[in-house]
Length: 141
Image (tube, rainbow, N blue to C red; front, side, top):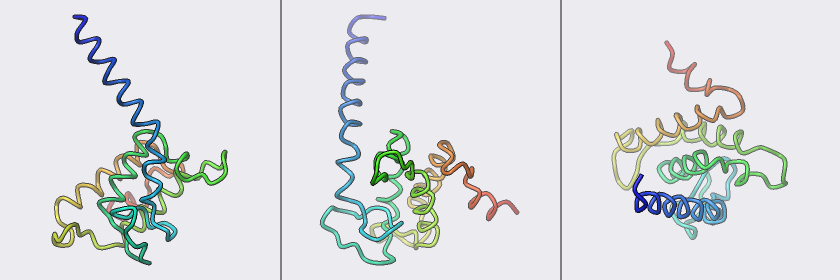
């Protein structure tokens, strides 16, 4: 492998590691104040009860799942390991919410794709060892 490619790969790895180090603290200000509501669009957005920002929540949960940071984000006390359960509970709330984004119609392809991608991410990490039975059982017949 040419030396320049190796240097570039090392730099990319360093950059990725740097971003991952601050992922949890970067996302904390976006956390919705209501339980199982996920994330707000901006840190200063109101945390309105029963208002789930589906696209922002899906994006943030996918980032945390991919980086294996769900437990770091949701554990108030170290060692509780409740991140996967919280992700599953938020996913349930997403399924109950209107799938609209930025003025798009409900169940639009963009938002639907994000929800399906999130399910894939959560299936990969097997939240709460349930293999996403909620979606599998509700759409299997």
